[in-house]
Image (spheres, rainbow, N blue to C red):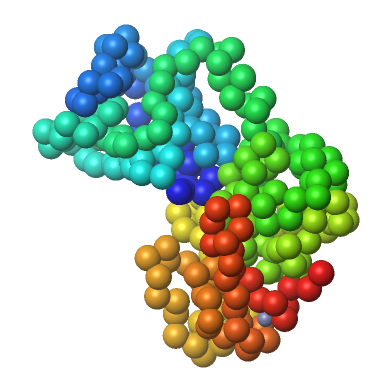
Length: 269
Ligand SMILES: [Zn+2]
C-alpha cells in the first residue's frame, strides 16, 4: 500500500496538471458514472491529502474522496489520451493531460461534512501543516500496544506505512516492541520531527530514502540497494543482510499484519 508521501505527491500532481481549468470527467468503468456526469466540465479548485486519503475539490462542498487501498493505481499522461480501458474508475482530461484512476478501494463524491468526518477519525499527518503531534502522543503514551503497531494505526498517526515505521524506529534506536506508554515525550518529538523531514523528502523525490549522508552507498563504498521500492534504507526488506551501522543481521517478524524489520543490536528497549 502506498504511504502518505505518495498521496501528498498525487495531490500536488493532480493540482499541477488539472488545477484551475475545466476538465472532462468520466468513469469508463461506470462505477463512478453518475458522479462523473455531475462533475464533468467543472474546475478542479484544490487538492488535499490526509494520511492515505486523497481529496480532489471541485468547487464549494464537492470533493472526490479517493483511497487507493492495496490495488489502486494512478497514471498521468499527455494528451491525446489513449482510449480508456474498462478498468478506469475515474478519468480527467484537459487540453494537455489526462489521468486515470484504477482499482481504488474508495472513489466517492462527498460533501464538506463527510470530508470533516474523515479528518476527524484520522490521526495527525506529519505532512499536513495543521498537524498536532501532541494529539498523537496522548494516544501513544496511554497505550500498551507496541510502538511499531501504533505507528501503523491511522487513528494515531496518519500516513506512516510499513517502510517509514521500520526506518524511523531504526534511526532513533528504538526497539519496535517497546510499548507506547514507555516512550518518552522527547523521544516522540524526535520521531515526529524526523518523520516530517523524511516524508517531505519522500514527496519531493517520490520515493523513500532514509539513510543519513554517512551511510549512502557512495559514503560507505557499498553497492546501491536493489529493490523495486527504490530508495536507500537501513532495515526495510533487508532481513538477514548486515546492518549498515553495526554489521549484525537485520531481523524480521510479523507485526500488525505486516512484516517488521529491525536491527536487534542497534534497537534496544
Ligand atoms: Zn545494527
